[in-house]
Length: 502
Image (tube, rainbow, N blue to C red; front, side, top):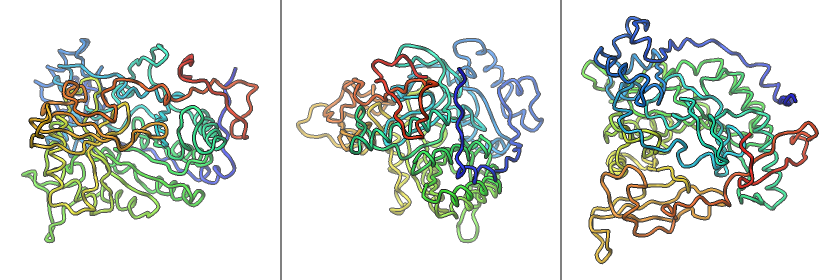
């Protein structure tokens, strides 16, 4: 049976009919083979030394093959910045150290428990869509290495397959059905307790690798489905800022004209100020007579055009990664400089427990100390960012790390770490609850604190996967089923009885 195809409305066509799709020359080098064979452009070949390439070649075909863990990819723009920046080299250069310890979770935070249809994660009032499985370049510490590397993942029903990408018809059907059930039940879903699905994050991979026509198709279809805010998660401002050209801005301007009620939020990903500030021969940032740092022109041009549109919010978020930005001064410059051009500082993250996370993550307490130190001397509006860590129970803030013992409390002789749940599935029953653990300066993940839990009202260490908040699965569409956009109901089955993710 042929699957139905999404049909844009006449309102959507007002946007879609005017989209331009330029070709972009990112001058990408993919894989290690061009470096090993000498096929890479002459000026890029020396990005890896002969010794580095020999060590990486010896790992090929073994369980420590770095490209099997995470594909290698690089744009010319990023190469030109990285040649004079050790942190940026660390960010994109493959290293044998990555696969010394392959411990980690192939599905961090059990995300697939919250996947009602392929390519959609619905954990909070917001949904996340995998709309592409690649970026212009690849961060070695990527949180989505299982998607980028196209790895097989065990699903909640026991099947094993690669993560798939979202499809417009399936996603919009799901949104209509979910929100109809919420409205009929007085504001919460009768099975999961979730509120209206009102915000969608386009992710992947990097959505800005998609052509404008596909971005516009997602924007307009989500707007028609009743989504109130659309986020785009991207690192393209670092990898290839020329992507933010006239054709892109014409498209989003037209979208805003037709759908002025829908908010657009760009979630950008600068890890280090070297990704947008120019340096001199000594590696120092170039400043004018007033002390303002000089930006890479194409990056500043793109930022100004984004921030100059008052209906777009632009927010930066980044993990704190060893050898990349585990430097309080770099984090201070990052926050201060971005805020000065209209970019908000959203979150900093402790590294996630992806496969091989021990090669990249800094200890949780170190990350807290680095961020805290970086915000000394920043104004209140420059230092909005909080430090979070992603748990199965939801996004969790590392609220405090203390140095002094707590008298009479066994396990607190060296101080404590306080975690607080910021975001929580369903109707967020645990939001604001805390967990207090004794300090472990070497702790990289929650399991490094399991033997020192002092208070856990948040349930971070209960190790239970609450069935009540799992996403209900949509049954496959049948030829006799009316289109959900016409107002009819789409049938559900609970995750416990699902036959798989369609």
